[in-house]
Length: 297
Image 1 (cartoon, rainbow, N blue to C red):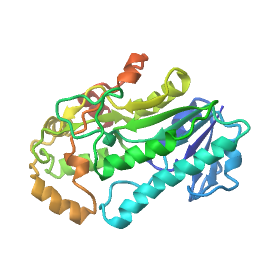
Image 2: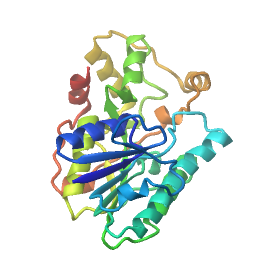
Image 3: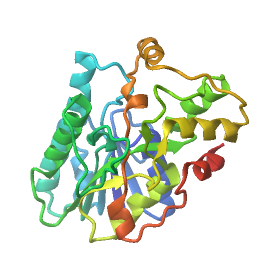
């Protein structure tokens, strides 16, 4: 079995590579900075020799896209948009030209596509998408992915929540601020935090690849979102930190400028539910946040 992971040198790509190599896949990573034997150069915009790797591959996973952990100025907004749409468009073109296209293509999206929701669960069938920069990026991203039908390629857009792991992403930052005594609630603390353990993220993608009944959009998230206030309390308890200073919104706004990021990453309420995964029988190893944090600490 041959798998292509486009944009696969980051936190999630490295985890998926290790996971699927253990499952006896031959994994090829498309990257702008090839450093290992299984890396192949691409610029994520134009066709090139890399396209020979796609023809005859069994699985294609596209993770390409500039990190949203930055200030949303015009330059960064343009790069966030272009990195997602251009990479998806060029893969779309190459897959259409393949004599033996991948039988399944998983393309990144984000749970951020759903509106701020503190009570209503956002499911695939009836979740409400909104109208701001982040949500519109996700809608354009999925539009580029689904605008062509590939008869022999099953396509799934991964509406992934925040992935928790020790080697990257949000968890090391949350752990650091908690240990510094800053692990109180952020903002009002009632915003929901949708999350998934890294092990479950990898297993969920494996489950989708093997389940031919799953296509379209799929929420990749734990079935138990947690309030920010509760998340931080569990972080403190897990790490043995007796207190944590709260951070009101105006403090977060100032800190975001200093840290070159956006408060949306902390203050938006993502209340997302993995209905399709559960209906198809996927079993989460880490269903609740306390369990996940105990494993990671």
